[in-house]
Length: 128
Length: 141
Image 1 (cartoon, rainbow over the protein chains, first blue to last red):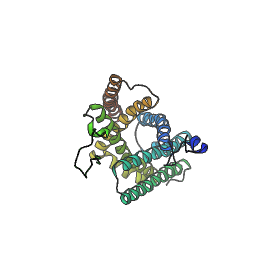
Image 2: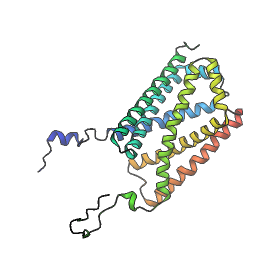
Image 3: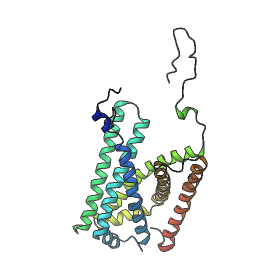
Image 4: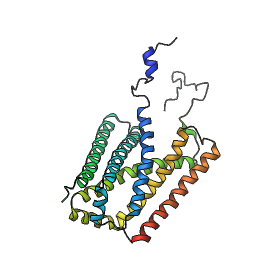
């Protein structure tokens, strides 16, 4: 006889209440990054030079701007998940861990905002 | 770690208590590769700063971008980018290895060792090839 409720068994989340969500997000973002990063590296290699006009012209193209936005968002999320695991594994003191996680969250949120905003600024042609 | 020894009598427990894997596994190159996956991942998180800096500089106008190009052409920055590129290719190849494991394949000891060598040597080869392409087609980035 199990003391777990039928609903609890269906959800299968255990005491942490989040189940495999973190693990699964890391796999999904890694598969997405497989394509996005290879596209980016291939694009870098096709640049004849890294002049201002060439680079901003390339970033500003709609397809590139959309893919770059996806690349930034996915990379930041994947990085956030990965660094979180490292902190959880090696930092055991409660307060330092909490503060470090908060700091890492802030940094990643800032990187996502900066990166996406920069791409959109170029794409919508408001760059100086 | 807690041993479960009965301190009241000082006698040892009648059985050997299990140890955490990292306490009793001998060192093998496959666990070095596993650690390297984590190290390169952390390195890439730092490299992300450089990538976002490049985008922000491009969005901030030609002067800011020219300044960024100076920063990126500094020998230290180039060395860092070589390190980031190796980290990227290793994390990519070893990441594929992990995804294959997650799908339930490649766990045989000989297979895992072979795929480990492919990921490690492959990433060195691809990194060298990448920088060969970069420098052969246009000189320093």
